[in-house]
Image (cartoon, rainbow, N blue to C red; front, side, top):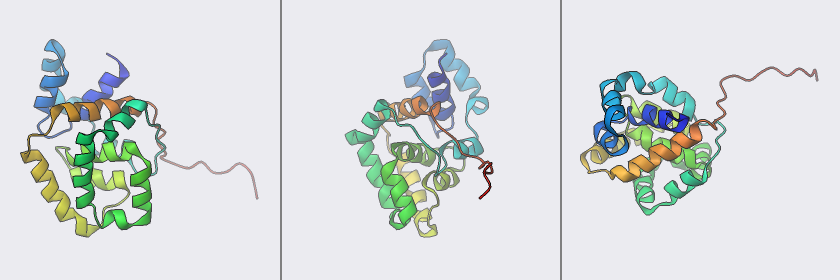
Length: 180
């Protein structure tokens, strides 16, 4: 199994109702094993937040650029932006959101996470303004109730999985060796 496939499995198994996506994306024995061991294969909330935290350096692949430019993704992005209306008025969040396709794709997956989606989304966008939380909860419920395009979700997962090995995660800053 490739790194991209392994990354994709770790992303998809953390999504609410991931079974339909697994049925679409995986074949035979791999599908059965992933469905049986999903909780062991899924990124934890802490891992998700560390990987996709605001401020990380991202390398965007052409595949991700194509995914976030699709009409279907843009529609879901607009819905998310409507729920983040106050947050995206803040300059750091707005700049980060507009300049990073990885952020927008990760935000979609954060919203769909089975566990603490709002905390994950908070990390991805660099802080969610409290007044947006209710709109985000409503959007999460609406998106989960909708028949979400499994092909779009698969493309988003695969595109983001392809970028994951290219991430530079900043967890600490080393002290300077040069005295001023």
